[in-house]
Length: 228
Figure 1 (tube, rainbow, N blue to C red):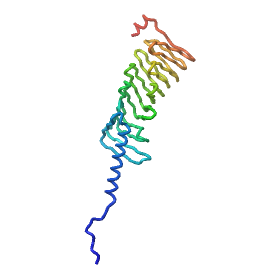
Figure 2 (figure 1 turned 120 degrees about the vertical axis):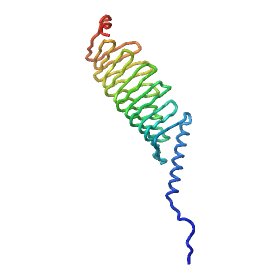
Figure 3 (figure 1 turned 180 degrees about the vertical axis):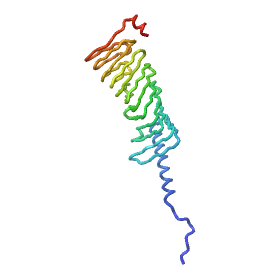
Figure 4 (figure 1 turned 90 degrees about the vertical axis):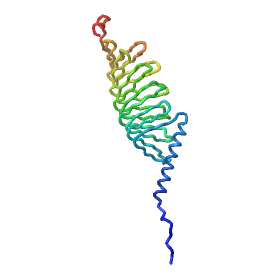
């Protein structure tokens, strides 16, 4: 008669869970090592992830927050993915700040690429440039960190001191405080109104150039005082 074994039957489920958890923790360690030049911190109501070497990702849900170097992101959901975890996607009540760039932002969703040094904001997007006292709004904003430019698309609105600018498309150059507008652009400056097919504006010098189907109205100084 064969004696029954006194050892419990082996179940692969707990073992697999342990292995997957270890791999996931290793992936987080790799991510932190890849960002060694800046400490990475994150908080959320829940976290899930995959250590798949071909598609690694970490997902933060509920009151998600991520801090890396000068970048701070708050959102309902934040997903970190890509080779070397260089991609960040945030959705739902997105807001944040790039401290060294003196920029604050908000949108419905965000896509950040560490490799390309770009930040894309989608849906009721807004960026406030504290350094130059400029606020830009559009449905889509792409910030290129290396050359410090803002690509503005759809329902563009930009304010600088007394200047108020609207258009369908725009390009803002931070270094020179220069703005290009197209798509029914219009610029209002202390009661003066300018419209054309394309407008370029050196905001710091108050120099404006109008191109194509130009029209506008200019108030005299005393009229402007009354207008105010």
